[in-house]
Image 1 (cartoon, helix red, strand yellow):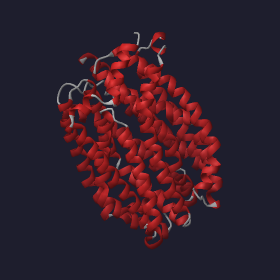
Image 2 (cartoon, one colour):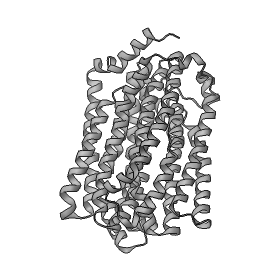
Image 3 (cartoon, one colour):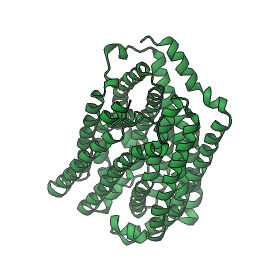
Length: 466
């Protein structure tokens, strides 16, 4: 295993120092996530400076809808990755290969179905979001291009999920470095030189995602334990059902959360372009500043999955302490920036004085309370890594309910601040639910040993012919 680690960037979380292994995995994964956020951030800057605030609002307006569609595929990919990591932790290479093969098949079918659905649903979705007519044309031009190329995002997410399940966070980083440089170059070319409009940003994103997906797929093809044969694709239905039962709840969790965000977006859009523009900028900052904690959560998920598969339950507790420490440090640093320097942040993305004023109301509220969402990522991924995707899914339902209820009740008396209150209430509610779920999972050890998905593993070992 040590030679495999050295050659293929694979990390076996079931042995060695938990802190050392988690940090080895965390830093490349953090750089990957930050690069993704930074090039999305710069993408908005290029759109704003080249095309104006209305173009920023149009691209930002697509954010919640894009998360609804792509978030579903990311949830499935992460759910599949949990079982792949558990197989790797248990050192069951035959079952590992069969799960990877089934993931490839499901990924192809998934990309076809989601692309067709999203293209057909786009115009109606924009109406549901109460998109201002001033923005509608740009939203459609951007949306048709970005959703038409969804296969590229799905391919990268699935390939990256497989690699991270094996502890390889370096390859996705290298892929994103290449694609980020390409994306920003193409953004500048299409928007500032060719003057294509917002669709140029979408084209640049798709091309860069294709490159990153190919990069990861090539790496997977060179890993000896993942060299798939024809018999690996001859899977019984139990393999596919096992993946779906773990992946679908995580996919629904992302989509349900996105629906809540879409409803908030609808309330925001109903108050005019200034609200839409300010909300788009604030959402960019939220996504950027929670990224380190989200990465700590991703590390917790991979670490927990491998150790759960190996039945190394005490190591999971040690990993939890490491990931919570990372989340707390990032909260102190980035939450302080949002709380005390909102005007500085707003000036970077926005030009209009009214949208800047609104952003300055939103950012401090979320900055002070960001610790709840930071810790949420760690506990939720820990619960998922132990093979329990149902509770996180219900926490997504709670997030949706709280966002909708708070924005509906408070946007009248509190205006734009209600958007921040909606975010914070969703964070706190989901955090409490996942924290209780994680603690209860360890309090009653039998629940850890005999979860539904552990039972499925036993069935698989009896049924799968290898």
